[in-house]
Length: 289
Image (tube, rainbow, N blue to C red; front, side, top):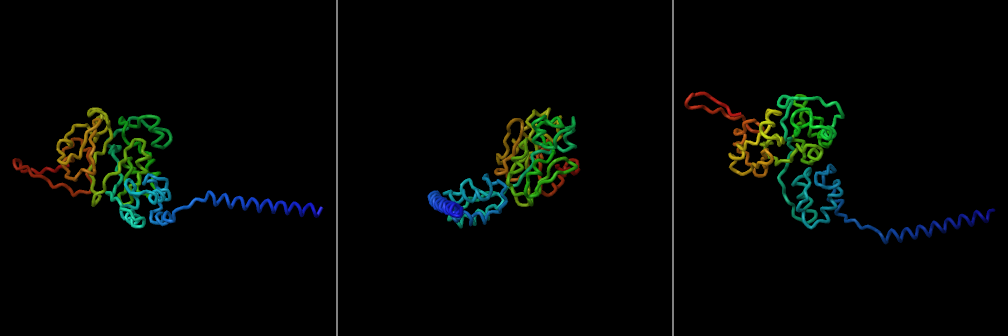
């Protein structure tokens, strides 16, 4: 009996030793050598893992940066140019600078501007509501107001305004990660160039209906009149599908388009109040809104 137990122990020990040796050689044969610079680069990234760079987390982005010959098309919106410059110095590459961006909601269909025609009584999700029907108003392009964008924002840069029923972007906290852009089922968010003083000029409308229909469903809808397009001296405005769009990279913030818009669908933010103009014939003061 004792001899049997002894043989069993010796057999198992021998088998374990052989298996361990085999596993060692297999591990050495298929050993993956990881570039130590990946850890260094990852430490420079903000560890937000937001996916704003287009990759699955900071680790994956760090691996891509180390393996890439050039930084063209590679950018961390959260870390910005400063972070990319430090990483470029570590890897001996040249950083590609980009203008900082900020998220903008291209909808001004507040409760006041866009009257409700029905009431949705389902799951409080923009994605679900958008898949089921056109919305609680006559505009099938506007914001549902259920806050999917707020839920996905990891930087507390979005909140719902209880008065307007629309999400509001906090420019100071926004990192332009693009999570809200991906979450909105109606593509109402856009990452626009961030100007000093958080100045902005953009068309807050995505309604592609013709003028009369769009205006009926929302008081501040773009009616595609092309007045802004004609007055822009920098060719920053394009017309497509009955809708005006202002290219933030071409726009110089001259504000000429704002005063031309008959429906006030072009929003200007961060500018001083316009001075009243005096009509020389009537001597009356008028203010451009």
